Image 1: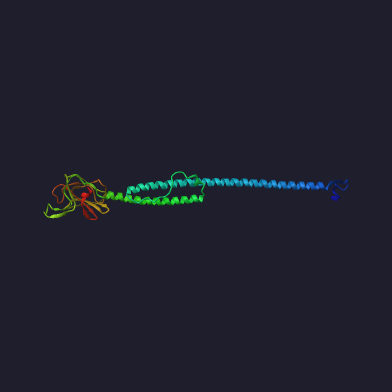
Image 2: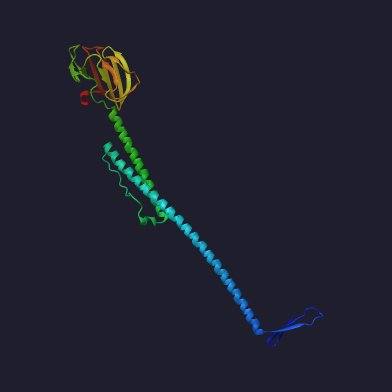
Length: 292
């Protein structure tokens, strides 16, 4: 039992009913001091606990932010490498396109794309990911334009190469010209008639060569031209080889310039061994001397 007597607290302890009670007196001031100490200790514990929790939370947040920052820096470095690679690829394609245009003989200049060769400047590494992603998108678009332009130039170049290979050029056989393209006095009728090709005199059996790439359109025999080979070169060009003694190709066969196709002969209406060589463009005979 605790009772308040004046400025003291009296504490009486009863062990049991038969025992003598034990009486203790405690000053009120001591109680207040103890209570104050307990409050201070409690507040100190609360403060220390909060401080410990806040410090741990702050350290975890710092670690998280550092990890996130490192990840962002790695991502930016990867972006920087990609930007550099795209820039180099665009520049390489641009240089290659200039060469292709020179080969194709086109006068158009490629559109300038302001890109740089080399590492990404330090100032660009500090840019945000969104800005670098836009740069990558712009470079990818520029790369697509360059590839399309290069493909168009390649097509032009391929067409020019194909046209060059399909255009008859050079002598079809070794010999000498005995009759030219144009009107002449026919050795058979004695009247003027149009001679639609060249007569090249040579020994029987002299090889005859294709003057351009093409496909054998016809292998035939006629009373006028004798054993004849007709080659279709595309682009409107056809060549005709007449009076041959032997034909070495067959209809539908693909041949290239310089391939042996026949041998000089004296078949059909002829006054001696020679090759009758005709060149036609869109069905119209033209003078082969311009292509020899």
